[in-house]
Amino acid sequence: MPSTPSFWQTSRFRIDLSRPRVMGIVNVTPDSFSDGGQHATPDAAKAHCDRLVAEGADILDIGGESTRPGSQRPDAGEELARVLPVIRHAVTLGVPVSVDTSEPRVMAAALELGADILNDVRALQEPGALEVAAGHPTVGVCLMHMLGQPATMQDAPAYEHDDVVSAVIRFLALRRDAAVAAGVDVERIVLDPGIGFGKTMAHNLALSVGQHAFEALGHPLLLGWSRKGTLGKLTGRPMEDRVVASVAAALAAVRQGASIVRVHDVAQTVDALKVWRALTRAGG
Image (tube, rainbow, N blue to C red; front, side, top):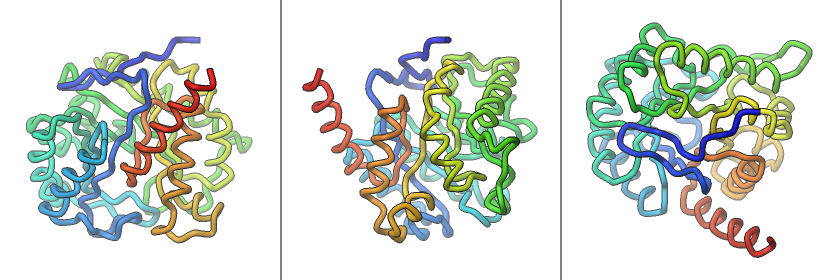
């Protein structure tokens, strides 16, 4: 079994993964499932970046496309207008900056401003995306699994033999191989199983139980459970009341080997990880 690197090489930072890292979410969209467009204006999103860094975020993830179930994709011009002013500010804050996009024009523009990571829910499948990633010799890349497209991904998702773990591993291996063949160094690649992206609650739980199987791919894992619908089904809580559930899911993901957790509630997750690490060290 290949060993998993203890770092993530990105444009400006070689991120130490010897401890779990917290990626704070900055949705610059009017229709985000999680925050209802609270940070849709550049000024609000910039202030949110400042707040997340103050709360202990290790990485900022800035996105201008809502990928909630049923969402429609914006055109490239609209996405650029949303994210570029925020990225321009975020790169001054002293932490790695990720752009959450599948659009090659947005990727290229973000990298010109100094962004460090391309976080792509479509795993660099859009024409030109692989070339952008390969053309920047140190940019970090996160490849995520999604079944279908956001507009339809939750319309009865199904996997061959109902084996979601094997299906997601196969997909991520193929996309990793495509990235490496295009010229992306392996140390720049992180993988994301895509919790909630074309998966039922049973699929999401199976991915959690089977998370250790992803170690065979030899890459750090990024998990994004924060405020997802499965947590609402498990707890009966509405979106705004899923902080505790989200933190619990992040801790479970880390315990199962995740190197990065992508979250909305940064301060709470940072505190929980500090306590968890202290108590697990104390217990030997």
